[in-house]
Image (cartoon, one colour):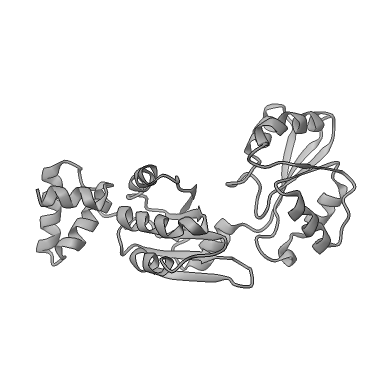
Length: 276
């Protein structure tokens, strides 16, 4: 009989948040695949356990190459526990390839539920939680990032993103450009850790805050679109939409930002059309 693949959630900040089953699964595993074996060692020390099984590294750089050997262990009957640095494996972390391979070969896949930066940030953001989507990390290149956000301009669900601290200001600026300076959002930094911080406000204000520098693990939560009617992207429709908002009392800048959001275009493009 084949073994079992266990996706084990690990604390995103405090070791005391570890689910009760985590220690038992780690100590009883035949193989532990860890994104960072040094962090695994520290986690085991915090949990007061000793590993009896084999430990292998399993991270982005070797995930593809190491998956066949782990699948072989599963097919041989081993209980393989997969842990990443924090949170649930395969959610913007290594794990998807191994899960897909296990499922393809009818190997049982189960999980030890644990902390999640996605759900934690969503819960503390103060933004609507009834419907949401997880977008992971935005593209690093500005053009690709802008196109991804433009495609999300009409998304009505609350959106959750992961971001590196040194790219947070650029990501927020791109969000403000594509979604509007006034779109409500929250930047959650170092969740559950000693220096936890949650900054809430319009994207424009958060850009100014981030310009002073951001440290630590970052999760960004952005409110979805209000559901206002979309605007066609042809020049005539863009000009008419801006003029209509101005007649309703909006400033030219506000009108351009709103029309850009509804059309899924950069504000600069709408500005150029209006002033052409």
